[in-house]
Image (cartoon, rainbow, N blue to C red):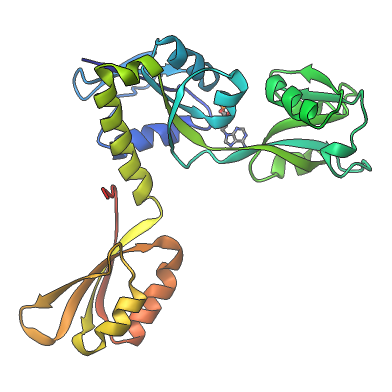
Length: 288
Ligand code: AMP
């Protein structure tokens, strides 16, 4: 049986998706020119390269069994697919933005009749309907941030990550409609039949890569007499692994998985209790 996986052929999610599959042991031969599809792990997987925005539809219709795309697109298309997993990359938010000099601070301040340009008409209409506002949604296929300046719209709804694009275009974020990250989605029928087991195995593999992100493997030789302190410094998953050293009774080897964010402090703290030979290694996968 071959599982068909739809992934973005270009754009912001494309490289990270290929990297994720690669780390999970699924090497996709991309070649120089992006192809429409490729095989991976022999006949086990067929990778379909398609537009991120089309992936919810392709997965719902069964053109692909699973797909990777943004949560914003899953919600905007309203397609009936199973959300299998948050892949925790491609973070952004769908926000309402207004001209920087405008008197409006929140979306609730916008008067009825406001023209809102967006490539997310469905989520935008839903959002303003919930606020009880009768706005006029102007559908654009991209570059919504330019529309207030050319008199096409009074406000926009668009994806924001750093906020840099809004600033450059003299816009100010007024409200967040939705927070988004990349998701693994699956076709409901495929999940329920013989393909289900293969989909769950794939999810498990991707989960282990996602769990390893931001984590490092740390090894150090530490004084046996100070193990209590070492345990406090190195939380690990279930405490550090401690091993005897062959020729040194006073020191032991301590290994642990540590958070990248606390790495700097952890290494300093270990030095303070007399650790030597500190090694920090990358982790590709973490199977819980
Ligand atoms: P693309 O338009 O093909 O680059 O891909 C768009 C998808 O990337 C969106 O639907 C989001 O899920 C995700 N994304 C992450 N950050 C951003 C951002 N700052 N702007 C637009 N899309 C983003």
